[in-house]
Length: 75
Image (tube, rainbow, N blue to C red; front, side):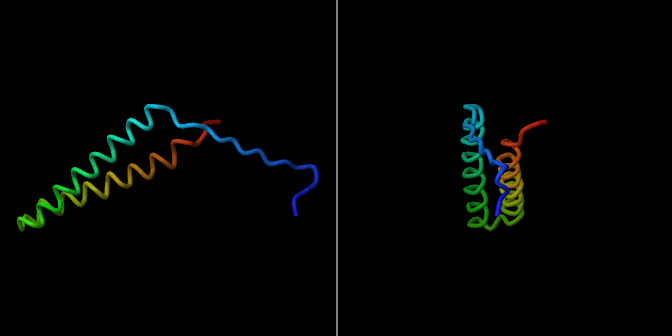
């Protein structure tokens, strides 16, 4: 049960246009690298596929961290 004198304030901020530009480029790059990885597996180029899947994982981690830390305020 919250204290009667305390209040909670929620602030909703829009993301800037450049964030959506980078997010779109990131998604496009992810799709292209996944296509490369799948094609490499079909052609039995397993080293190239492993490098592509590694690049997909690294880009995914960067994207997730970028989304998490983008909204943090600097105080």
